[in-house]
Length: 264
Image (tube, rainbow, N blue to C red; front, side, top):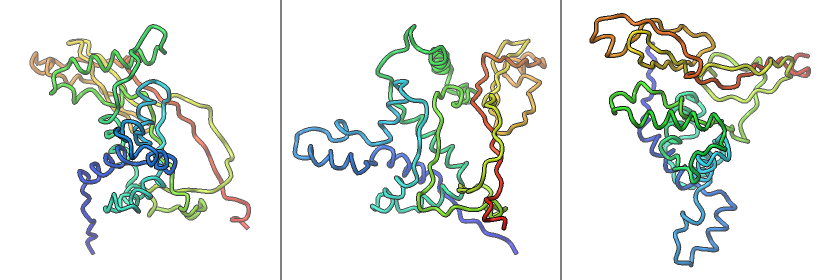
């Protein structure tokens, strides 16, 4: 029997997530908004949304992570601002929606208040150079420059507080791709190691930079240069990985086992 999967309108979902980022106010911000509602000021300028504030902190190099709380978007949905069942979609297709949220964060990221200076971290200087280089590329060429390379923040999803906690043995194939909360005993924690997020190569023939996004622990390195220069010259340029153009993120592996009361 053929399984019919419902179609998902990612464009509409992106618009709703974008609206959530721009409009969501928590309880504390709502009380502050009431104090200035009778003043002749722009409330969104005086008290920007919770997640716009987080984006500003990242842009001004005051933080390097954005925690996306599903309880917040559930409250936003309960208020009638979102009618698309967005929370459930995020929880059942998590990896796809993480990419959508990353794109929206990149689009809404404000301009930093303080320019890059000699006192800033070396990583910030390198990131700024990469952004400037990306802006100098022609629009058709920017598609080969991964946005993950210029991000200086990480995105984390915080599950619903009301979400059921699963035992390890309860996790099965139906949970693949879903956001699940598991309860168990941590038996081993590995050392923090670098995880390759974007691999950077340079061509020995044309000198062009080629980037490869990595989504798995194992990577098959690119060997031949796909640039237009090599194709026009009818040569097969060999690629060499350049560590300085790669992007690494911290990676740690955790091993768990069942709780004692679940085994007995």
